[in-house]
Image (cartoon, rainbow, N blue to C red; front, side, top):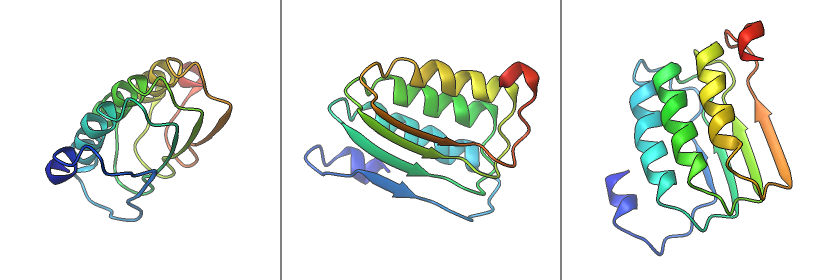
Length: 119
């Protein structure tokens, strides 16, 4: 991710990290969130992070990064089968709510631990 941050003219609209089944999901999300936050002119983005053990801290980092992408018009965020709970969903929602230009939005949070407070 550090190499990506050093290439400001690189065009990326999709990141897929499926089925890594690692315990470092929050660290992955931290670096992705930091990288995404620098893409302030991004208009369309697909972020697929299924089965990565992303929890509350990771969701917070992703939410903070997405919040900086105020020019996003299309966002596909797939966090199927992670460790997303009520607070995690809140952090994601807060970040996504800053993307006031969204016209297309897809959020997949199946097989997580979101209860009534996070819905």
